[in-house]
Length: 205
Ligand SMILES: C[S@@+](CC[C@H](N)C(=O)[O-])C[C@H]1O[C@@H](n2cnc3c(N)ncnc32)[C@H](O)[C@@H]1O
Image 1 (cartoon, rainbow, N blue to C red):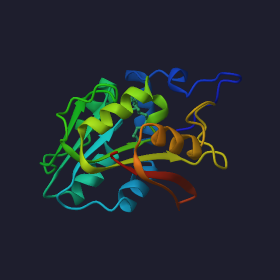
Image 2 (image 1 turned 60 degrees about the horizontal axis):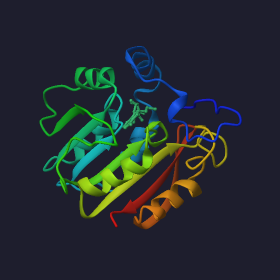
Image 3 (image 1 turned 45 degrees about the vertical axis):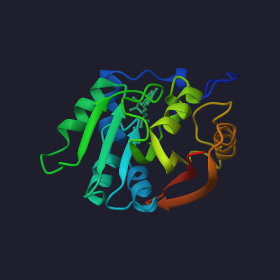
Image 4 (image 1 turned 30 degrees about the vertical axis):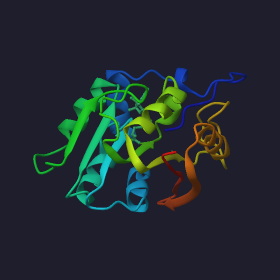
């Protein structure tokens, strides 16, 4: 989702948007099934036995797509906005027995150490209150050799449209992953239906 940058503000964007019941309903109607979810899940190479955590899962579109692949594993979507989690459950039928949604934020992931094989975050990193704390939590919950995938829409050339500062462009996100000592970092770009994403892969340090 494009959020207009605050001119002259050296912030990564978390403070520019309030997530609540109203914005969750609006987001669900406008962007809930945005193609970025599909582009992510199709391209990350999920295995049936993967244990996937989607951080900032919103209305759960990517998590549902992942649950259709991880049939011998498990998918968990977390989001701090209670209305997002409510909508995610409403849009999920009883056939998704390997999928659950929980209220929770990146800075305090409500999961045990080393409990997932892959963590994704789609158009959400810029909204985290404290991305450094979030990265520490991602490392904690990933199993050894686990993958962390950051996806953002391409909004304007090589920027994400979420303000200035340390998360403005893919190169900045690669840099914060390096600082947090993630390894095997790579950048990919995918397009479909006139929209595009940057997908940044990394592995637990
Ligand atoms: C632009 S929406 C993207 C939702 C979904 N991933 C998608 O692509 O449809 C950003 C999401 O990040 C969530 N969010 C905000 N702060 C967060 C935090 N500290 N940790 C995790 N998610 C957060 C919001 O509640 C919101 O659902």
